[in-house]
Image (cartoon, rainbow, N blue to C red; front, side, top):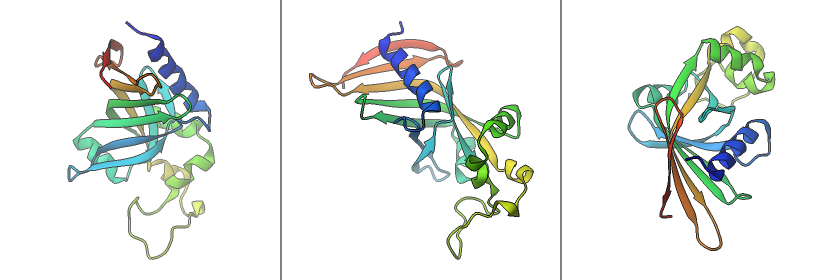
Length: 187
């Protein structure tokens, strides 16, 4: 059974895609690196549909190799206004130089794509601070560095902070990403 909380989360995630100031526009993405150590970073929500969240990354980044080895990830969203935390356990899928990737590249503002014009891969040690010069790389060359990560929900763990007692719920999804079951949990 779906409920009002499930619908609220769907609405908030959809709003966060288009509203720059929405609390869930920037969220925490966590996975394990190639040494099996936890790594968390902030990423920008680019799309949400059918219980799937996506963001962009540089295909040359260390997280790509880590995701190839372990595609299970954790996402964390928090809204102070709603007093609501959403943790998503998901399966990350990498899209690179394919139709989805090209569609996202073509529909994204140019200023948001400038970071993919770096000659050196992310985390390369530099002798001086990085200064972007987009003219050093063509748009086609930069596109090769662009990847979309789609995170298909496996489970949502939702914590609602309330004066009369916090409430916690768990929503699970089938392998296709469709809603499966909702349960209440002890906070």
